Every structure is written in C-alpha cells, then in structure tokens.
Length: 391
Ligand SMILES: CC(C)(COP(=O)(O)OP(=O)(O)OC[C@H]1O[C@@H](n2cnc3c(N)ncnc32)[C@H](O)[C@@H]1OP(=O)(O)O)[C@@H](O)C(=O)NCCC(=O)NCCS
Image (cartoon, rainbow, N blue to C red; front, side, top):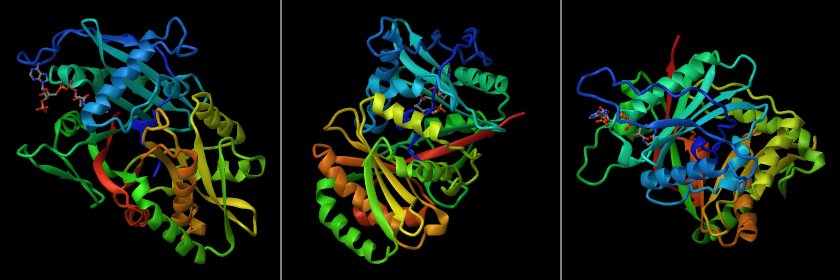
C-alpha cells in the first residue's frame, strides 16, 4: 500500500481560515477548554525568521507520535517535512497549530487533492494527551468540515493508529467491514464514531529488524529470481534516470488504482513528468535518500513494478518503506518478492546504520503481507481508515 499519511505528511500546502469562536459547547456539562487555533505559517526555509511555528508544529507532531507508539520510529525533522507543506499544484493543504496557554499542543491539517472531480478531503487532528478529553478535538472537527465543504468536498477521510491497550484496560474491538483486521475501540475510535465517521479498512503497521533478516532476504531473492524470467532488476536513488521516467511515473499513478482501497474514495492520480519532478524535489530538498528498486520488463523496457525505501530523520533512524506495486498485468512472477528483497539488500549498503524498516499494508492485502511476514516484518500496530460522507 501507499505510505502512511502519518509518516511522510503527504497532506501538502497551507492556507488560512478563521479559528472557530470558543463559545461553550452544546451540552451544559461539556465546556470546551480555552485554546487558540492559529493558521500555520509555512516558512521558506527552516532557518527563516518566521519558522518558529513550523518548528513547534514538527516538535508537537513528533511528541504526539511518541505518545501513541511509545517510540520515535516515525519521527521527522522540520527540513524533511517542510517541502510537503509548501504550496504545490497537486494539493491544497491548510494547516493550523493548536495553542493552550503558551504551548503548541496539537495540529490540524486538511488536504484538498487537486485531482479533477475529486470529492475527497483528507484530514488529521492531533492533540497531546494532556489536552485531550476537554472537547477541543470535537470542536476542531467543525473547522475540518467547513474547510472541506467550502472546497466543494463531500467525503472526509482520515487514518489513525489505534495502539493495543495496556494490560487490564478494556479490550472491546471493532472489526473492519472488509472482514480483515480489528482495532481496539479506543478514544480515537469512539471519537470518529461519535461524529459520524465509519471504519472502512484496517492497515497493519509492521517493523523489520534488518540485520537478523538478511540471510532470509538473500535466499528469498534467489528464489524469486527463478520465477522472474523476462524481467530485470534496476535500482537508483532519486532522481529517476531519464530512460525510466515515463514508465515510472505511470507506475506511480497506478498506486491510486491498483492498491486495495476497501470502501475508501480514492482519486485516480495523474502522474506526468512534472509531477514526478515535484515528488523528487520534495525528498531531495529535504536531504533524504530514496532508493527505488524496479522490475523492468525486458521486452518493452518499461518499469512494471517498484518499491521505494526512504531514509528517516538521521542515519541511525528507522527507515520507511514507501510505495510498493506490481502492475496488475505483471503479477504472478514473484516480482513483489524480488524487488522487496533486492531493495532491502541494497538499502543495507546505502543506510548501514539504520536498524529497522517500517511499512504499512492493508490487512486484506494477503499477497503483500505474506511476502513481508516471510521476510521477517512483525506487526507493530493497527491503523483505522475512517470515512464520513456529508451533504
Ligand atoms: C482523537 C482526538 C483528536 C480527540 O480529541 P479530544 O479533544 O480528546 O476529543 P474530545 O475531548 O472531544 O473527546 C474525548 C473524550 O473527552 C470527553 N469530553 C469532551 N469534552 C469533555 C468535557 N468538557 N468534560 C469531560 N469530558 C469531556 C468525550 O466525551 C470523550 O470521551 P471518550 O474518550 O470516553 O469517548 C485526540 O484524542 C487525539 O489527538 N488523539 C491522537 C491523534 C488521533 O488519533 N487523531 C484522530 C483523528 S486524525
């Protein structure tokens, strides 16, 4: 599946919308605590004089993810995230920071994709634990809905990690309508349901400890090669070499149509060479390394499968598996296994200090999960994909 919205913050862009007034909420017993919602200033660079709010947003993001996951696997630097927030033609991203007292305690992002005919707005509301349970998150949903409505969108979609409860905590669970995967009925799940959002899909977050997996990965690569006659593996770090730009851009566009989407609304993305260039620039400007491992169809010279690995906040951080895809018409040749294994082995040389790789897959995506499990990826958490349709 595609990389998590949570990790690389692909919800891009920025804008300003008036903060809601902080009138008491509807129920007498439920009064929203005072807070400020400030449109996020997106600076030209991380050392620009107006970068303070952006840096605070990145800090609070990392702290919230540490609270949820109990580790820094998804930590990002300001330099890494900045290009994803700067204005671009692919999406219109509106972001705010939430302030209580003098502290930035959360953030809100609404992302309006630019795809023609799109009905969707992607969003996140994330608050530190210490300000949860005061009605702030519920009130902020009004801002999300207003922003989406004004942009002409009728479908809200959002992803949240639902960590496993501590021993002794209630264990009621919610099943995905796909029949694959469950999540704990925790605060975010109750929040989504209370506000009319439905669980559409469960994704599995998995972690691979690289070093112990290497002998298995080497053997699995050799096994896959036997079944992959007519294809060759090509690898590069971004930018994409000229001879593959066209077919790689096409393969990227197929992520939006060929990955399992359950009941989610997914726009078909158009990837021309300009969009590919913008995608590359976001990672290169941030100083990140992205390794692409592609399977090339010998007869046509086209990229027909690819896998992307990306460096984390520093050389010793957890690496991220981004998109992996085998085009439908080229499935059945073990290309998924081949490119995954070839990617991990090359990544070991490129990022030898990175101990782990993190990846996300739809729980119903058995072919991909089977490869990952055989390689040694272990489940770390489950992610709910939530949707609300409104008029
Ligand atoms: C999910 C999230 C956004 C909710 O925000 P929040 O501000 O805690 O939401 P609310 O305060 O409106 O509701 C949370 C709880 O407080 C209760 N509550 C709200 N106002 C209250 C008040 N004034 N007095 C007492 N209780 C109150 C609600 O009934 C609710 O109870 P529950 O957890 O038992 O269901 C927040 O918990 C969060 O940031 N979680 C991590 C990120 C995440 O999962 N985001 C999901 C959306 S992308």
